[in-house]
Length: 275
Ligand code: G1P
Image 1 (tube, rainbow, N blue to C red):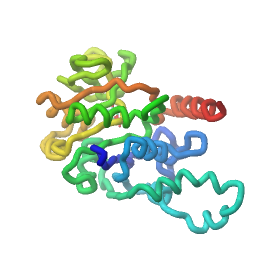
Image 2: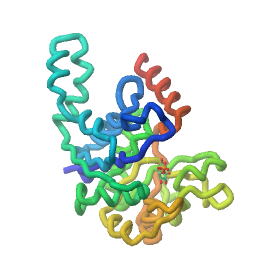
Image 3: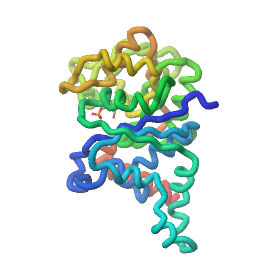
Image 4: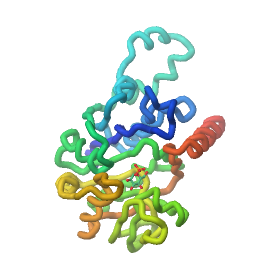
């Protein structure tokens, strides 16, 4: 049995930076070349041995559910044609994973979104992927690397990377002691601090492994930055008990919440596909 069986995808956000493209389709359906961001995210979870995909969705997000379902008419149409293979990967995912959905009615922050997903997860450690942080790695996927670390440390893990000092206000920032190469025992974390108040320039990116006690902690955490319930604040409670590891992952991340990095991600991926 793999140690992590479920991955939570908080996908209720609006994607306003991509309007008008995201007016009627979810931002997670934006393609990198010809595959939507959410499919890369699900494939990354699968590569880490995870089969239970849990989505916290919202209004206007039904295309995500349709994507991970069979489209009889379309598949009948392309059967035997030279485009049939284009749906093979998607079909493989659908046949090998289970999908569950719940709705976040109000946007009250990432911590709130994760808590809304509690009934899809139950009492077991789980992964969280933010699909607009698109990650590519040469060997093990970023989440696979993190699951291996979880097996060793048995506590919550956050993926981190070094960011320029003037960008700390876009991320959760950690402070910690490096206890092994690329592995930090987190002692402090702050959500989106200005440069002068940032404890370091080690930023959290959208990959987490969380132990299930996080749900009760979230319920007791007051709203933080921007009046939203921040997962960073809930994790601070665990960090103060020495139970959060920050991991500088191997690979490259593109912040596909920004148009510029999204275009970069497409160019990078297209170049790789063409060899
Ligand atoms: C969220 C988290 C933040 C983290 C970031 C990674 O922020 O709150 O701590 O650094 O994801 O992408 P958001 O980008 O949703 O504002």
